[in-house]
Image 1: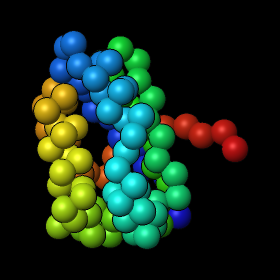
Image 2: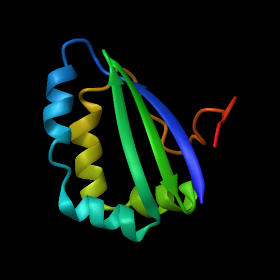
Image 3: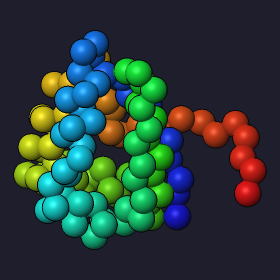
Image 4: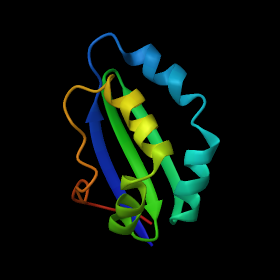
Length: 101
């Protein structure tokens, strides 16, 4: 299993909208993510900075399978309007520097 960390940033003034919209992720998208190997996806917010922690069987396979998903495309369009810049789903995430088990 892979553990991936991702970072995104919100546009100014979109913090509450982002929190509110994430209170209800579409069930069909969550079901697809689980079927494609996601065990855990957590998002932490500090002001406009978002930090994503993902546990997934294979992140590249997840991204490939979600690329053509209508549920994912709709969700990305909804969320991307709130983000400052593009989020590169093909990215391997942040480099781990230290870990304590």
